[in-house]
Length: 318
Ligand SMILES: [Fe+2]
Image (cartoon, rainbow, N blue to C red; front, side, top):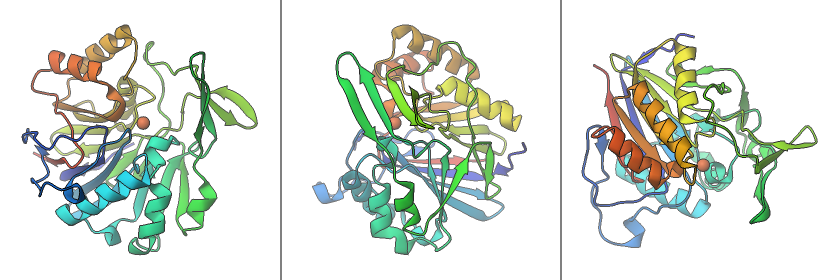
């Protein structure tokens, strides 16, 4: 599938596991301007992810919201501050994307629609994988069964937001690619048997086949891959993006790599294969895990950028 080249991509991190008000600007990463030191003006961190992505092609801007944090409290708080700081205009955002049906990515969505639906265009849509609304839980010897909840599709429809289910790769507004279901190719990027889902009445292991990554082709620079939680594996996700688009060069890998608490061997293999993909830079977020961020920083010196909620990435074509 041909993915048209874009001229620029601006990614604003709305929610992440990390907030660090003192980080320096680094390459494309521009830190949020310093604020008065009060809670009202400080961003919050939580175990979750949310971003605003604005791409531009031939003068046409295409903004979208990618995931919605873990809690209404943090998502709405951070969003309000960043809408002000960066003058983001909700009236221009027709496209909402949910990467997958885990609470740390959809947690702020219904409260956002409750508060801001009127500010969005009437024809706003939510794109999500086919399994995004299924009931999920985990089972382990240590903690027993833990409910992970489910996003209520009808509640979204009640806000007159059309839901578009995505299975195959899908082009959005001629600028962004939703990955479709990501093929698992590496031997070591495997799902946890502790994750369960109710599908067609069956209690089965949850491989999250419907998780969507977002992919852009930045002119002269290569692919920009946003992984969300990265349950398919960051290497599988980038290999998939390359195969679908036919573009080899990887400019940036940005998002959660889901390796917090993972076995050392898996982290080592992932880091080696990420290095072999030869990205110009990597932004590990959310569930990547400190061990993996350390290992990536060591293996790819100067290519790893630490994220903080509020950081804006300005990616510009050659
Ligand atoms: Fe996640």
